[in-house]
Image (cartoon, rainbow, N blue to C red; front, side):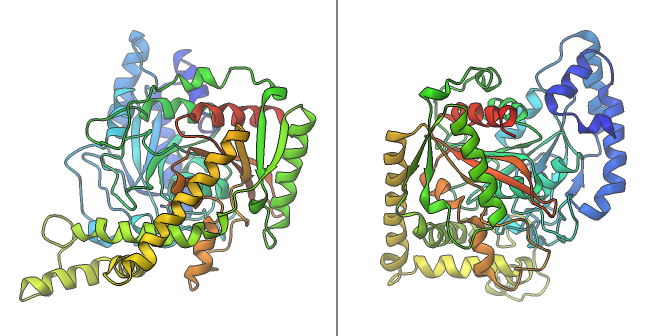
Length: 478
Ligand code: GLN
């Protein structure tokens, strides 16, 4: 068990020193998953070939030609395509789907020796904040299984928190990496838009989605980010902007007196959990004491973010989900006598409730007559939100906020009230609308022993900045 508590960088050192072998680790982890994941339900699928892959990793350590993630088990959210392993998006409509190709991020991980240990649970098509929208049943928070792990990457966050994997990939359209990382007390990084290839990620909101790492510490986040980043000819939105050695970057010294941290007043609102507010404020005070320049800033259009997000994200989702029609892949109804019925019944039977709600909403805001009133308006708001951040970054290096306004909630607590569920993302969605990089780092626990996190946000293509600061906080803040 103890071996499984190590971070990626620690495990790698143990491998190099031959104190433990990849085969032993993989055997232990499979054992743990088969026992403890019955309750947590973070995995939907376990890779049957892991032990064979661990054997070849072992050989490489013996021969001394090991790669960056040689023999390191990594779990992957089930909306990222993996050859020979199912990719279901936690939906009935893709229940038996096995992609014929690997996503670019998976190829990158494999080329660096990682072992894709399995696929993790999520809200169906990444629509949700609690992982309760999974067709296969919810994931539970490892800190207390009566609570949700957050979502939509709840399976990945729970698996990392429960030491059932050493790291994981999630996807974040409006907070789905950072919010579950926050609820599970782990590190979750959403790269800036265009940093990581989306090729092979089942699209939700194409202008918002990014894949990113969920890990036990900041160093592991830096290691994985470097491996999955970089231009990809399969995704024209993934740009050719130099990828740094983030593991080295985090070690660079920060000079507090030259460092400005912005605290947006709109992120410290009435109604937010007092323990979260107190914890964020105590971190701010400590940073100030250590010499950082803290400045109150304003992001005046913050309050319109949720409304704009749920128009843009559902509009994009409704078009992206048009491809699931029972013809090309996935589930097909048995109940049809003509092609119209085939489409209709396949989608009626194959999609869950929240998916249908979003398709209806998205189709509505794109329909002629409503397009200008909703979709165009939301795009204008999006520009205003982007401008708010741009202006702020003329003054400060980094922005610090709570990641969520509330502590993890109980299973079932919000399932009957979608609007309440949507508000979980109030501190995360604007970052996606603006395309910026942001990270959640765990900063302690509530009285009920539930994790608390803070979020750091920075300018596009400067992921090293949030990683450096996150690393500083991890090591210097009590
Ligand atoms: N919870 C948000 C939603 O339901 C964000 C989801 C995500 O980031 N994938 O849309």
